[in-house]
Picture 1 (cartoon, rainbow, N blue to C red):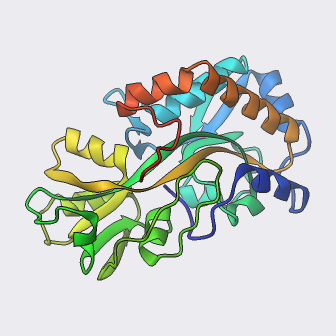
Picture 2 (picture 1 turned 90 degrees about the vertical axis):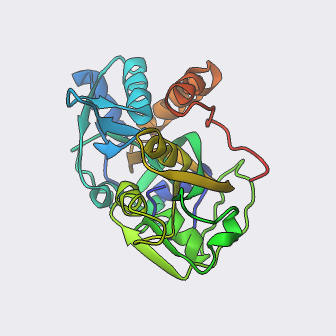
Length: 282
């Protein structure tokens, strides 16, 4: 999801890089501030259902939102949400404007230079959607087609065949599609909006997170999923560099949420499936 086209890395390497590159926070600074103010400030996306979105009452809802609220609760804090641009979040150097990103971010080597990734909290299946009128029946049928993706994300990297995922527990995958054209969009939703106009009108297919595709279908988009997921990608909590105490606390909380079933329960609530572990056989 939402990643640059650089090699993906495991949590160990991402954390190790924190000893090499410039800091954005002093040791213990973020954790001390959160505990003192009893407020955890989280960056989020107001238009990324079902992970995060604004409901009819203009309130945030979604899987990422619930995960963030639970983390804040276990810190003894209230959750405050801000909405900076994705490029600003991934650029690092947050300057204490927010404390954490629970935004379905994939850890990458580029991001590991400016951010830490203390915990993976779920894995999302990357899948292809086509219009209901499409004749495509399997992923391989999409070769030679115009495919829409979010710009600078793992789906674009997959179609360019330079995607590599190193995170522990992620099943291997193959590149099964040779796109005629990769058409990039600011968000997955924009790409799905073009696909809904008709088979081949603007796009022949879209590659996105399976929950995002299913949410669009649930909301009346005339689309269907083709084949099995192309790959499973890890999504991690991101923090500013330089506060190992805060990272350790986040890792401890997320580990407990895995172990006590909280993350599974939230995944079932929002996705209708347990995405807290990568599935083999993709």
